[in-house]
Length: 216
Image (cartoon, rainbow, N blue to C red; front, side, top):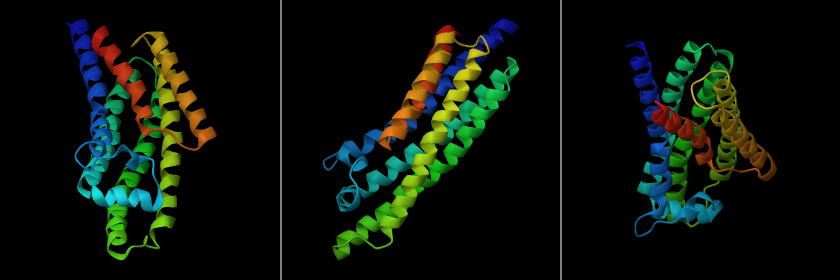
């Protein structure tokens, strides 16, 4: 009975980790679909970015709501994972990982709110006046700083979880190493290029979720 309960718990954990990142995928796809959809809305800056935001204001707002929600749902799933890891005897790294992702979630949520509210307002004002509002550029720089810190902390949190997974027999050891190597590689890429895809943060938890579901 105890073994069966443990297997069911692991399967449930796997499902939670897999589903946690789904809102991000929805949010990332939304701006690219529809008659006026354009995936370049994520890469352009300044007036070009605001023009696309103005043309897709409702979709852009919902995209950021979904992507902001993904960090929160992942935080909930990682909280459960940390509880399981602590039950297996590993506390330090799992707690560091959870604390790191909590900070990353706060930063990402604020950044998503900035894009959903301030960027849309600035885009509408630019359409009305023909010029970018003076307040937008300083706030955009502030927003990118939040994003950068979020990305660094998020990758470090995943590294901590990878190390925690190596200490217990929850998933194969190679999954822990893959989480560490992938997250460190993406962190190095961020430090070299100054940018990254936030979707990369969800790959390790997706991998662990799939393994828990299959192994369970």
